[in-house]
Image (cartoon, rainbow, N blue to C red; front, side, top):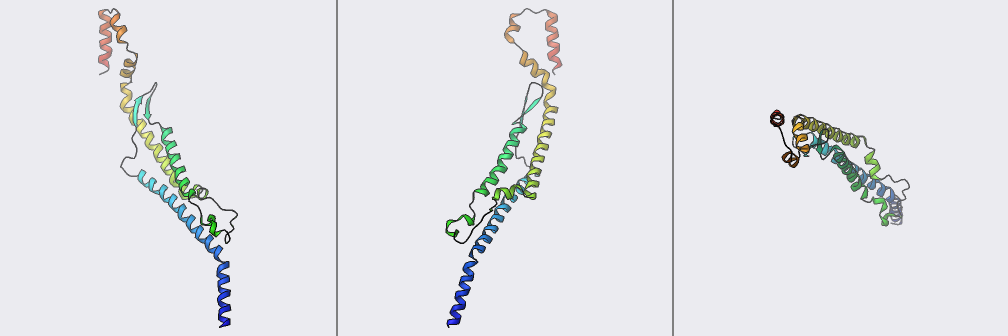
Length: 190
């Protein structure tokens, strides 16, 4: 019975000495799961970009020299950057098991890689985020071409309206030829 007890004590000391390794292993698995969540979020968003349903709406308006998109490309890209930063921030703010105070006596981690760094350097994550960015740029380019084709023919009317001064027109005297030319110009807008 004494030998059996001594064997159990040796096993208990051995198991106790391996507790730190077990905690580190669980922590690595947990971090891997967080990285997989971030990669999956980027992958899902990339897949949604390939679907025919609209994710975003953009409108157009006349600018000084061209049709402007609203919101502009820069705001879309800033939103996208904020989205990816948010994904990384969420997975990075979840504390690791090795940082739990009750495990301090068993675990001594010197070089703990933040989950955010692992995610941002992952090839799959980089590929998915680049795919989303490329597709969004492509769709914005397509929207710009479509808006230009649809609205640029009406630029003359827009510019005329911007320059029109109704009060000045009413107060000025006009000859029949001037009125005829103005009416011809407006008819040309049709």
